[in-house]
Image (cartoon, rainbow, N blue to C red; front, side):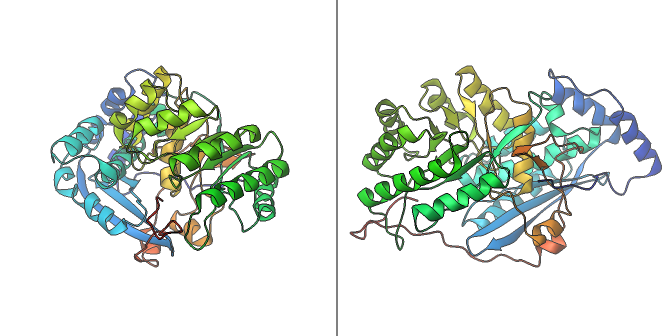
Length: 429
């Protein structure tokens, strides 16, 4: 399972500019200490300045839009980022575009300073929209810096901590345990070593607590029997469960040895998570709806989960994901970045994964890509082999996109599934 990508290089440079790029690119790979400062020094000869920021919404399906951006520089180096938030694409685009007036004219290599300015100066901070907009910009800035010094981003944030990264896919479900098992077996036979699914059922957008848990365990048991003991089964309860449902499901799932149970509780009350932690031995995971280092500090310090799942597109970007991982490492908690997004989000995550000692496993959606996305990403993206990702080897992020192709699929409003309990009450999702 390989996805080859074209070489990336700065466009529109003079011969003298190209010689300067070659000179800084020929220097030794940066070491793990002071890498950002060293990289900035190497990029100084280019005198980089941001000239523009643009964003686009690209529709994926009836259930999803992606939000992408590009940051342009005076030397023709263009960085790409992503800020996709489910069902909030139009709001996200506006939030990303808000940063244009701050960024234009500034040095793109001042990544930490720009992050602090975008986060602190507006006064209103936090949440999925504001943090995802910062994340999109920050990823694009790292892409520019990596291209400017001729190095993949992971070399600028510590270098390799491993030689390959285990991935898990979303095999899908079905109306019966047998259908579940068939899809998961197909994923294993396609060469993947791990998968994630919801398992807990709904019927016509209704979640019935006892039935949903009972059927979820039946689905899980069928999958375990189909894929065997060595295949990693990750479970995403997706915040749907009431506290009673969560404890019941985890207790019954323990003998089936899942890799982790994700978002079995809601994010508003850490005590709910602590209570579940005291009631089960099953590995717990959470984090896709938490933001910045501040959102993860107490969860890690109190050892409320075994795995944290920050999303590079939402948590604050590449360097913030690295900081969150360091907090987790200090508490011997492992990193499993959340990532149901595009190749940009996947590669941004992988650069952190390869350079982070306490990384465990990385999410992608299906592991397959439709022809449209091959055209959009110009054939570029991560490379996979035997269920693992290989190190990105292009300067910067390692992928770009053709906005003209994306314009074939303009924004389409999306409304998420609207779950209810049998009595008509609104359920979490």
